[in-house]
Length: 547
Ligand code: AMP
Image (cartoon, rainbow, N blue to C red; front, side, top):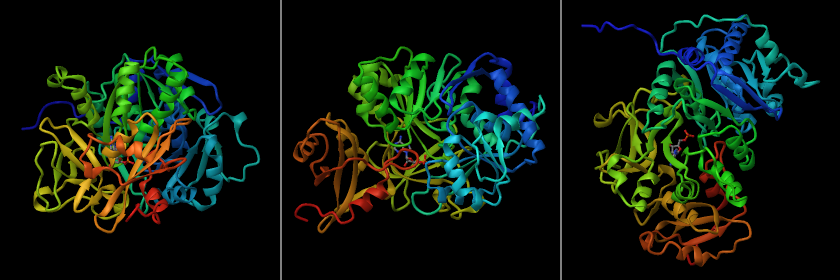
């Protein structure tokens, strides 16, 4: 027997219409590349997005076509998200921090038909344009009077002219909710990047799930400033979650330094934010260095790489800001788990609560997970046993765009249809997952695994350490031993022996790194994560003392 309820598809255009109708005067504020602040509301956003959809249709953009962006977080980027997605085409967000050759490769692989860019990225567009034959137009996201003069790019279009050419009003089509809406490529530190192709349905389900109180916990009372870029897995869903709950949005544009972010937090009364750990280092340095406080900011999601417990503590104890530590990946749209306290944790002492909050957390309904050992057996949820983390759910990929890399799912009998994340983790009896390492970063010493993340987290807790990374280096007896690589805080001195002594009593003695190397900077990848591949390359000739 079929249920007798309406068969309304879950579409991103529903989110836009919902926000425009039920939260028309809630604001979207954007720091523009031009430097000024742009301000309008969901009603005006929807009206401009409809004009853009009409303009794109007149321009020949068809259902299923890919339209790419190289853009900061801002209102025009948001308009492209919704116009392109809503009309049944596919928005393809590209990370501008990738090498131009890699960007061109991605554009060609995706067969993008249009590419919209912020003026900051004009040099990239100039470098790649002639190598991207599928792109029929390059849209500069600016006013007419800001259009680059004398550019050699053929088919350069002004975004505001394009938008103005569109008619008012657009009838959002009733497309299949399983149609593609958005394409994101993995960062591809090894091999070519692979595309994750999200559907309207997966995007809306994730937005519903992510907004829940024990997940990201967003509401109409929030003013959300996503520091995480809209080119990094859709700013972790915030451009969809904010219209869903009716939250005010504040987009920081290109100004991502601590001072600029802090000023926007204060002037726009931001309550909520999200970003990778490295961006918060800049903000905390600015706030601590200038003895500032936050007047409204009270929660932030931190993920993308492990958030050091010291950072969670500083936010909580010094600034009253709750950190929601989250884990996910491009292949999961991206949200998988978040760490939020449950009733049973509330009566625990602060250090026990901190230990829970430092984990990557509990799944949202919609994601299931398990850990499996090398022998393919599922490992117990005891918080100690570790294994590769497998996931499944309606917003997890089943294959990559154009079948790249073959079938990614497991097909052994016990784990048929599960997606192997490549992360190694433990899960405790309450279902809180903790990442030990990326499987290729695990340090194998004498046949036993050492968690580089644990060692990095502890090192970051030392007052003289600004950044820390741990890699395995060859050892004649133990195969591999950990090497700690440190960037010191400016003006603070600390010795190798002091740092190694700092581990005493905090970990098993044999986990202690064999040596420390001080560097000026730790290489970061395109999404702000430590590039361990580059570090291993840098230290390939390094030999441990006495080894
Ligand atoms: P990406 O698809 O580029 O977002 O990268 C996803 C990968 O980032 C995951 O598979 C993890 O290895 C890592 N990652 C994401 N969030 C966390 C976290 N909170 N702690 C540790 N690693 C993380």
